[in-house]
Length: 198
Image (cartoon, rainbow, N blue to C red; front, side):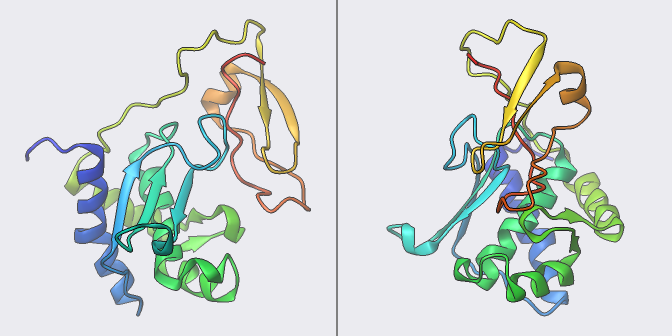
């Protein structure tokens, strides 16, 4: 198989596997979707791991999906991509409401709708897709070259509600902390660590 770049990998995953998966559940992903590995609208320090921009924001009427470069695990990338493709499918005006939830749960997403994960069944399906397609051609990007925080503890902050927690690099490597604030619209979402100046 030829070597793919990240965008080609995301595109092939969508065309060959995710679109037929959605169709089998009664949903059609629009044709006007582009996907890339990029920082979301919150920037390098933002905690959003995926984002879908409305086709109305694009000069050529295309939905733009961004997967945060802090994420490199192929199965998790596919999981995030599916969430963002649900947004493109039902329309961003649906938010994470009833229509979004119906589509998301139908295609195998579970949990809080603002921070879904794949069901065990979907995880197994994604693993098969990745085995056939190959690994996501990306390495985790966790620093932009700015002087790293010198203390052992890393500050992780919710850019929406301001919740913050300090943890060590060891535990960040195990799992990113999440926002526990019930009143925050991104409650349950991963917090990205501040690896630059505090």
